[in-house]
Image 1: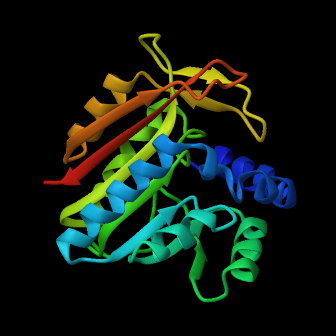
Image 2 (image 1 turned 180 degrees about the vertical axis):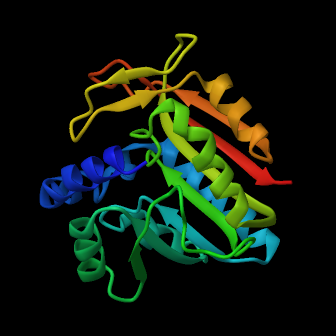
Length: 209
C-alpha cells in the first residue's frame, strides 16, 4: 500500500505554489463548505476536546481556519512541499508528514478530524481502512467532517483530477462505510458547485460512537 500514496505526494509537491494560490481564499466563495466547517468546529468545541487534525492539510489554509475557530488544530500531509509552504505561511501552527492509513496518533487522541477532499485520491478498496483509522484516533464523541466529490452513479467514479487521478463517491455509499467504521452520521450535505467537471460537492459529518 505505498504506490498511490507516493504518487499523490509527488504530484502535490509539483503544484505547491499554484495550488496554494488557488485555494488560499477559495472558501470565501463556497458558503456551504465554509459553514459546514464552522458547524464542525462548533460541535468539536462543545465536546471540550479541542485537539483537531486537518488530514491532508495541503498549504495549511484550513488548519489556520480551524485554529481561528477556537480549535487546537494541527496539519498532517503526505507532501513535503505542501508542508514546507504551510510552515512558512502559518509558523504558529504545527504541521507534520503522515499517511492517512497510519496516523501517528494515539487511540482517542482527537476531538475532531477534518478530511477536506483529502480522501479523494484513495482507491475505493482502501477507503474503509482510512475511515477506520480516523475512527481510531477520535475520542468517543469526537467528530469527523469528510468532504468529497459526489456522483449520482451507484459506484465510485474514477476521474482525472487536476493534480492526479481521483474518485467521486455516491453519498449514501460513503455514509454506509463511515457508519461501518464506527462513526454515527450526524449530517449529510450535497450541493452543486457549478464545477466545470459537473460533479456535486458533498460533506458527511459523523461522530465517534
